[in-house]
Amino acid sequence: MEVSDFEEETLKKRHKRNPFTSSMGEMNSMHEDDDNDRLETARARFSNVIKRHTALAERLSRDSDKIIFQRLQKEFEAARASQTEEVYLDGEEWNDGLLATIRERVHMEVDRKAMLAETDVIPNHHVEDKITYRVGNKVTFSTNKDSKCMECALGVGDPCELYHLVLESRSFLEKMTVLEHTIPFFLPLREAENDLLSSNAMRFIDYIGELLQAYVDRKEQVRLIKELYGNQIGELYHSLPYHIIEFVLDDFPCKVIVSLRYADLVSVLPTRVRVIAWPIDQFKKSEVLGAHPSPTRLSYAEDALKSMSLPEAYAEIVLRLRQVIQEIFEDRNPS
Image 1 (cartoon, rainbow, N blue to C red):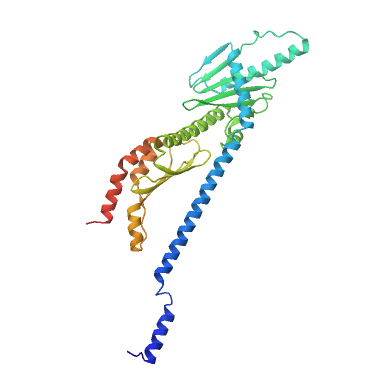
Image 2 (image 1 turned 45 degrees about the vertical axis):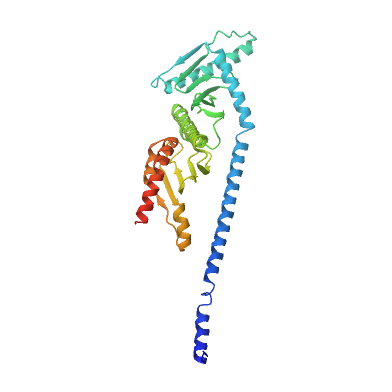
């Protein structure tokens, strides 16, 4: 059949208006390949950032910090060995009056040593009592330094991790300052010193103890889920203070992305939780149909993470996960 000039012209115009109609499938395939390549590139870069972040954290937390810890730990052990009395206190006895007493002992000991040095008298080590005070996880004592210092050792976690805090008191008219410490650099020690130490030394020490306890608790929770469920967890990321935690579950009929945020550094339970599930089977079907799969928020998982420790919440999530995903499939694909 011959085509008229008019029909030929019409076909040319139609082709001009829709130049990609005949190759739309190829173009879609090319775009999908490009998207997958970009996604893999982004994933590789993110993985590299996490590795560099971990290496940097390890480098920052060793060497000089470890030397300081070893020295302060030796001083702590020497003070405990030379103590003449260890006083156990309850919560009410841990107060500003006690810290004032310890501070006074510090100044008296330094003055006594200075006087003995001037008179060339052989010191009698039994003249001055060496008392350590223990309340909860805190042990406070005057140090053997020549400067006017008191040290507080803070034990947190199980097994116990020991941190040291040395406070210097130049005179009763001046505020105490932090001389040295083994507190992790990413915890806000200097901010707490500026806000609390000059006005309430007891509250300052308590707050540092709370920061350390919460940090160690969060760190231990992450360690436990890696130890107990590491084979089910794909990618896992956390900030240095463990106040941001994200991980992916791959070993299920869906891909689950968990994101946790803590309101502050003394929190042990997250305040902002988001758990998103991407059903893998649905994703494959959607690819065939050319549609985009929609994620589902798992509210039961979010509630568990807000009210339980991370290992307990994880166990609760995986216990019900397959059933919940099956119900989602049924709701979205009714027979």
